[in-house]
Length: 620
Image (cartoon, rainbow, N blue to C red):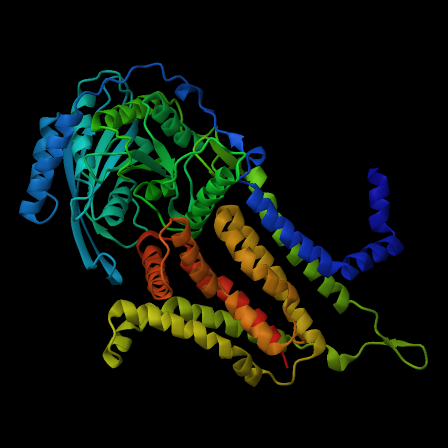
C-alpha cells in the first residue's frame, strides 16, 4: 500500500493527473471545505462530539471530607464593616485591613504601586493609578513552606465586592485554626482590580514586563501552585459562575473547573458558566441551542485576548487559576455565604493535597457546559478545513505560474520575459502594507496630544479616531502603491503576490490557532473566503464591498453585536458602535497594561495581510 502511494507521487504522469484534478475541482473543493469547517464547529456542541468531564488528578478525586466552615454570617458583618471604612476613607481601608488580618493570626504586608496609563481609561475614569495591595500569609504548619495557594478578592471603588472581602477574612480566621495545611495560603486584597494584581504578581516573581512602578514585597510564600479569585456582588447568591478565560486566550487546567463543579454538586450549589444554567435535555433543540450559545460566548471571550478576571494574569506564570463570581439573578434558589465558604474550603483542601502542579488534564478545550467539554482533538478539524482552502488555492496558483511556456512557429518553447513579475512589483505592496500596519500600531498613542490640540476631542477619543483614520486610509493603498512601481503590474505579478499573501495568511492563522484557537477560527471565517477568491478580474465594486465587510475591523464589529446577543443584552446600532469604539480602546490598554497580543497581531500582521489582498483586487 505504501509503495503504491509512493508510486503515485513519483510517477510524473500520475502526479500531473492528480494536480490537474485538484486544480480543475479547486473551487468546489474549497466551498465544500468551508461549509464542512462551519458545520464541524456548529456540531461541537452536540452531545456525541463532547466528552463528559472527569477528574484526572488522583489527589483531588475523593470528596468524602466534610467541610465545616461555620462563619458565613460573621463574614457578612465583616463585609459591612469593610464597606463602612471604605466609604469613610474614600479608598481601600489599608490600615483597617492590616489590623483585621493581624487579628486573624496572619503575617501581613502591604505593597504600594502606581501606573500611568498611555491614555485615559474612560470606562473606569482613571489615568494616573495609585493604590496599595494588602496580603496576609498563613504559614504551612506541616511542610517546609516551599509551595503556596492564593485566595484573592479585588477591592472595587463601589460596594460591589465587599462580601468577597468579608468572606476572605472569615476563611482566613477559620483556616488559621486548622492544622492540616501543607502549603502556605496567601489572602490577597488587591486595589484597582487587574492593575493591582499585575503589580503584585510582578513583584512576587521579580519581573517587570509592563513598566509599572511598584514596591518590592517584604513577605513571600512558596511557589504558587494554584489561585482562586472571589467576586461576590450581594449578600444573597443564587448561583456561582466560573470564569476561566485568561490573558491571550490562556485557560487553566481542566481539573480546576472539574474541582469547582464537583464541589458545587456536593454542596448543592447552582453553578453556571458564561452565566448560563446547565440543561439535561441535550437531545432537544433548546438544549443544543443553549450549548451552542455557551460555547460561542467562550469562543468570543477567549478570542478577545483580555483577562476576564484577576485569575487571568496568574496564567502567564503557569499558575492554574480561576475566578468564582457570585450571581444574584433573583431566582427562587438561594445560596448563603456559609455554603460558599464551605465550597472554597473544600477546593483549598483538595488543592492542598497536590504533590505537583496540575498537569494531567487538558489545557486546550471548549466548554458547552460544566459537565461536558470539547478537547483540542475534536475542535481543531474545524480550523483545519478552513486552512486547507488556503493550501489548495496556493497549489492552484503554483500550477498556474508553472504552466508550460508559449510555443513559437518553429516549435521551440519560449518564456515571455515581459510577463515575468519584477521583485519590486511584489515587494512594494508588501512593504507599504506592513508600514501602514506599523503606523496603525504606533501612531494613535503617540499622536494623541497633537490631535487634542487641533480637534475638540478627549485623549481617548483621539486615540480611537486616529486608529480608525489610519485603518480607513489603508483603502487608498492600491493607488499609492502603483506610484512606486516602475512599470505596470503583469498578469503573473498578481498571481505571485497572491501566492505570497495566501501562504503568509495560512502561517499567521495556523500559528494563532495553535495558541488561541478561538481567535484563529474567527479570523479564518472572514479572511479565508477573501484570500481564496480575490483576483483583479472579479467585479470591482461588488468585490470591494464584500472585502470591506469581511475586513478585520468589521469582523470585530460583528463580534461586538454577537457577544451582546448571546448575553441576551442586545443593543441598538448606535450603542453597538459606541461599544465597538470602547473595545478598540480597551484592546490598546490591555496590550499596554497587561501584555495582550491581540492588538499588535491585528495591526502588525493581519491587517497588512488583508491590505495585500486589497492591492490584488485593484491590480493594474
